[in-house]
Length: 210
Length: 210
DNA sequence: TATAAAATATGACTATTGGTCATAATAAAG
DNA sequence: CTTTATTATGACCAATAGTCATATTTTATA
Image 1: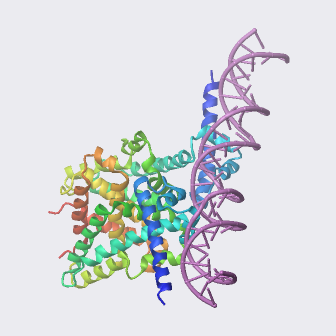
Image 2: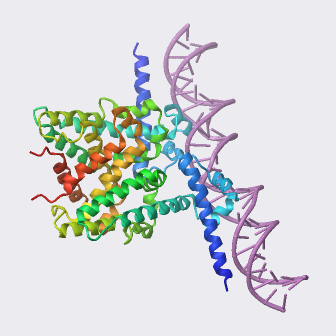
Image 3: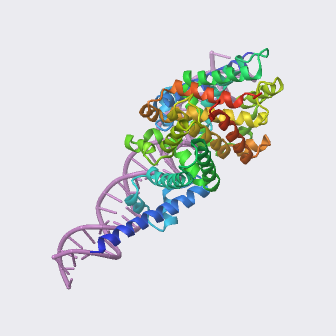
């Protein structure tokens, strides 16, 4: 009985084709500058068909967010090395986030935009996906704990709080760069340089003082 | 000739009444949950009248943002004391931003939401208001420079970059708290505690090491 | 005060767009 | 080959930002 399997595959493929089309347009024209009709045209489908695969525009947007989060999680997990100290791993993970930001700016913006606008409307279960074992935040907490145990990371602040602080701070600077590149220009600030400097400042704050 | 003056006052008053109505509804129902008709009803005016005072919904939203920025600027400027060191002043200014966040959460959200969604569409001149002499960012740069001159603040990073980093980092954590309070609950993190801890981490990173 | 001119306000109307659903086309099962 | 199930379509609906011809109110002028 290979027919159900084939149909499932085809369903998945169409799902992906729609996300591809939406992504292409969103990344090019911004999340506001694109209508569902535009996406349908790009995907060579009727608008109604989109709604067989996504229950709303927001749901489609969220599919793009999930793609981005998958990439980000992969990048962050693959630099982890259990032989290194917690602090070293945190640095590597931070660098992975930087790479994500630079190489996938569209996904970064998709995530930030979605968070800013739609988070309040998310169902509780969806909100908690951010706390999945695979989420960047939970992974950061674990590694920060390791760092506190091996003595490379400050005990002044509990690991969970440190994780939230680090994550929010780095995201905050990326967001500034993404939204206000023009201002950085005017101040004569190079974004990459800014990120490097932030990492220096952060490292100072993170290290255990002895 | 007091009539033009009176008319100007009345125009200003109506302008403010409309912003009052919009603000009330936006703060209660969120920036998406409110229509222009809702605002007109709340202001006891016809919808068309709103458009005599604001060229768009976005423009009305922006008026609320400007109110918030005025308050924030006042709070930040009034704690500055030229007799203190740069670092001490930066701390006070940070605390002022915390007060703004806690006492005016509606304005904080208005600013963040507007930035996330509408910044790309802003006209260049409007974008640069953020660089006005009165803007928080420019003031931070000046005070950080003073701190570098009096030796209380690290020279590792230029003042302009430090300002952007500090501002973005603090805003990033506030934004996390505003959007993801539920997650903090689940992690057992108290928002005020989180902010205090962030300030400790930031102070370490900021201080000149000797 | 009476009238003309200017300023302000109104709400029915338009255009856009997210989302729906009766109908059609296609594929699978019997 | 016929019936049933699945997938696709696009005309249609509802909501809402924004417009504009008309009406009302205020000010200036005679």
